[in-house]
Figure 1 (cartoon, protein in one colour):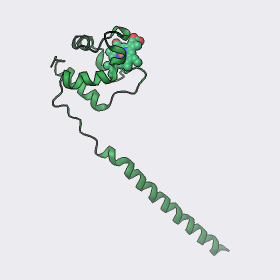
Figure 2 (cartoon, helix red, strand yellow):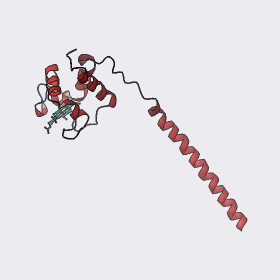
Figure 3 (cartoon, protein in one colour):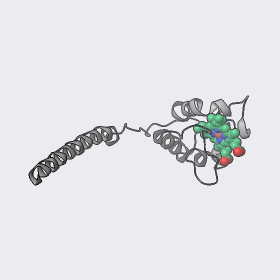
Figure 4 (cartoon, helix red, strand yellow):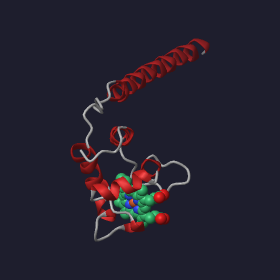
Length: 128
Ligand code: HEC
C-alpha cells in the first residue's frame, strides 16, 4: 500500500514538473516581443512629419477647428504651440497629476509617440 502511494506521489510530482516546464516555455514566448521592443526613432522628429500625424490620429476627433473640446485646437501649429507654451500638452498626454488625461476616453498614446512629442517640445516646439 505504502509503495503504491509512493508511486502515485512520484507520478503526480512528475506531472507537476512537466506542467511547470510547459508554463516556463509559454512565458518565454510571451516575453520575447518585450525583450526586443521596436526601435523608437526620435532623432528626426519634426512637427509636420511626426507630431501632427500623431495628433491627427488621436486628437483631431475632439480638437480640430470645428470641434475644439475644452477650447483646445490641435489641428494647426499655432493651436498646438499655444498648449505647449501654457505647459498643458505634455502633462495631458503623460497623464500627469493636475491634468485631464488625453486622449479622453481612449488608451494612452504609445510610449514611442509620447517620446516623439516630448522630444519635439524639448527641441523648442518648432514649426518644422
Ligand atoms: C473624445 C474627445 C477627446 C479626445 C480624443 C482628445 N481630447 Fe483633449 N480634451 C477633451 C475635452 C472634453 C477637454 C476639456 C476637458 C476639461 O477641461 O475637463 C480636453 C482638454 C485637453 C487639453 C487641456 C487639458 C488641460 O489640463 O489643460 C489638452 C492639452 C488636450 N485636451 C490635449 C489632447 C491631446 C494631445 C489629445 C490626443 C492625444 C486629445 N486631447 C484627445 C476631449 C478630447
